[in-house]
Length: 490
Image (cartoon, rainbow, N blue to C red; front, side):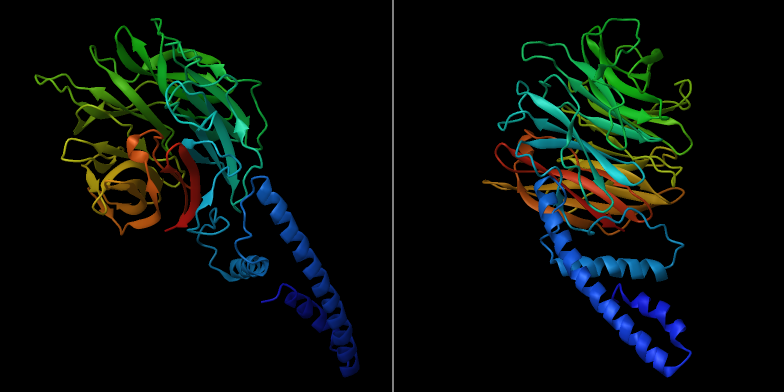
């Protein structure tokens, strides 16, 4: 349907008095429409030129499709929205569903460890980027970058650099959370190549990209011991002015996970509280989310001392009251161990549509890594996830109404190169079990990710209704890693 057809409908009732008036009015209207059509062609040309300029400044390049196709798609979407069933939430539909595009395409430096969050009208992404073009080694300087993708697929022309001093860590583990217009960013850093001290930083912006803090600030965990190292941060946003940072700090020779409330200026509020006060433990790699009820959920990896020499790691999780940070549940231990090298579990991204909190983990207790999905709110067991003949790992989970979705990597190795497939799979939560739906492959590419030079799981978040946004990094060649993303619908 042409976008000019409604004009005929408006003119027709005025031309019913006589046939002559009808003919005259239609003739004049036809001229007007012809002029408007000519003007539209000029405007379409201008839009095409604007798209070309925008693509040079980091906006999603839509010139791979003809300009006419973009115009027709836009009008079709308008017509469909006028006549569609409005009972379904429209969601953040994106420029094109199931079409991968580059995130921050203006940079050629390695990008990895991306994390995403939805602000109501767009998606913020934070990620690590090598300051040079060489590698992601520990003693290579890194920057913490942030960008925003709108629901139309447009990106910031210039991503924001959050750090002011170089980050000399292979895995800064950037995290972000959004609440009431405030975007909270956190990451871990080491200030120099020779220093052994690590610390956690925080910085805030509003959703329009204006800095709320003039510079990043070190998070001061108010604990009764002096820790020389803080690592593996995660952040949950409680309001426009308050958030909670979760991190692991050294207590004597062990690492222990703490929660610390902060303001949107990075100032500490009260004392930091431990997630688990058991003695003689080693806790690392925390993740956190906020349930629809307002409780904070934290998961972490903890060593379980036993009679063997392996001392396996297990995923632990617990909920806390947002106002006092006091526990609202006991510690749950998920009996799927990882013998030597633990990896982070994942909690579902927060959504107002779900009272349930889900978690995913990778267990290496079997012959190879296996992904498990569970419901933390009503834990009744674990559901294994796997696809294909490769190694299934690096999962991320997002909650939805009555269930959710998991994204993960499947790596198939050969003697020369590895193939990576990115899969997503929705699930339905029943009272006492989780029902899996058919998995869908989102992307496939050659990769060198298995050498873990550019680590990081995909990040998937709900963006309204049946729509989701997923971002991942593609390490397709030595010293190369780029971020890609896609809007998908289930």
